[in-house]
Image (cartoon, rainbow, N blue to C red; front, side):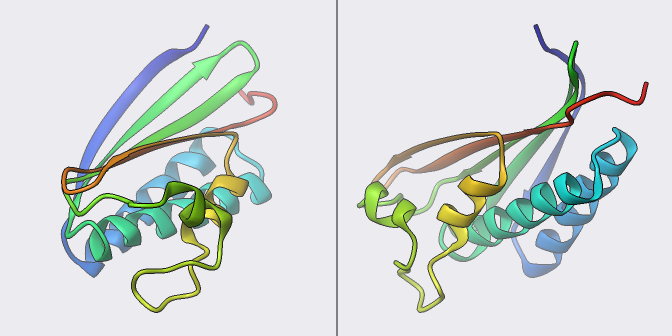
Length: 140
């Protein structure tokens, strides 16, 4: 059973917000005992998903939750926007597809970097992506 230790809501409306969210998640990962690889993974996924909220969703927010369970600590991030939604989720998650002339690896790459990944989207309504990353053992 997991317990929420704390949560923070942050807006993502400009490029600087992407940096602030990324920094906050990295600091929390380090504080909760994530190893260097897990810290890099959740930080990279955070950067990609924050950038997607800003560039594809026209801005939005992220809720960052600090979690604890018997096996260790975790971070759950819920990214929300009211953008155009994702018309073809399967294509977007397969990698290599982008509506903005990028490499198209943000969603598929982020999915591979985290322990849990959930995507909900509706065309012309918006997208919500929830990811979680866990430590294997707690230092505390």
